[in-house]
Image (cartoon, rainbow, N blue to C red; front, top):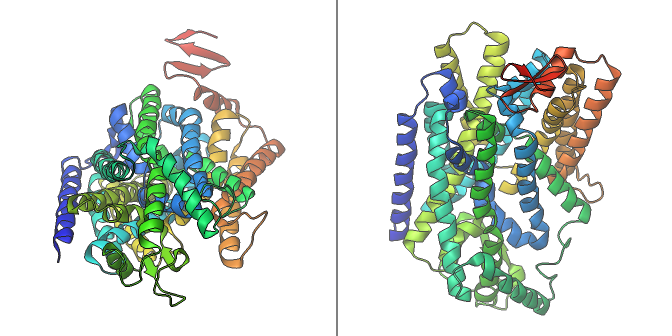
Length: 554
């Protein structure tokens, strides 16, 4: 085992010790701790936890690689995810916090007063969380596989064990504070390499200001090779796919149950709004850096690797070739590696950057620790959300309403263990790259939940039948298009599987509205509940008036 691997492992094990220690010290002792961290998390720390929960392996590991491969067309990921987060923060998070539930299925079940709606929402949450977690576990496999120069599948199973320990022990309370630590680690790990690469290549330590010059040079290199320029739009996908992907990610973001539940952990609507504001700051640090990673890495690969004699490639390439995420073969037999003969997996670009820039063993190890933090933080939140949907919304609220608190916590913990093992086995042979798998989860969330939540808050006429059939139509529309596109080659206007959400959301909205209008109007008190969510916590809507401090104000 070389020095680099030893240093990387020491850093990763040190961070693992921090996570497990935090989970132990803050372990859940009652139901409210397990599901919503006792509703006592300060806004700034909750914003940091949201940032860690949000910036998954797809963001940390896959985003820059996707931008490097797709160029302009990859910006749909950045715009969709960021725009969707604003959508969630403005139109859903504070209102859902005022309603005061533990989970998204619980909100839907109580808002529409329907056990059927609750169960459908719980099943959809399990599907979304399971799909999303496959990408995170696959990401952990990439990191550990590179460290040990072993198959990524073994690394995936190591991640499974870690998540099962700290998610099952700490619940939401433990995961919240673990995610705060994970955010600090992942953002430091993400920023240090790109700052040093920027300093090396441009003399400017601010990559956000310097990478534009590198993009211009990439355009010149592309012209010389007869390639489409890196920053030209709609070269990899059609305009309709770009828009559909952005739409899918935006509406999917607003419906992600594991992100929404984070806003249930604060004390007030005001704290929920401030959590959203702080989270946007913390998320922006990474998202503004991903394009710089893409540009710098592509430039180095095109100028220092491509064009080199096949037997004189940089030493770092050997390690990545061993992982199966990179291949370099002299296809035309001229002894020189051409750009077209170099195949780079999206998911290795960020992880390889410290080695590409020769930044030293400590930075390489720090990057590995950060990547693991990103993958584990989101996977932990997903597993808890999946567990909550089963243990709270199905087991407790439907089948065992008299179950003791101890029994409910036991079921919740075991459901995490079982779910993470099944997801880990699936991740051994993932059905796509990380960003693709994550896009599927967003499509399902957008089609199933976003129309139901938006209409449930902002349209008092939405009724139980509309919600039930709307969720089924949205879930079926998204899942159906994903399978038909991915496995049967279906393409409508060039829209592929990652843009499936546009069909699911459309089906969900239309079905909810049409069925609600065609069936009986909701009871007056149900409509007043919807109106009440729109007002600040000190105000209550009842009997056709707004009340504050026990006095009518409208």
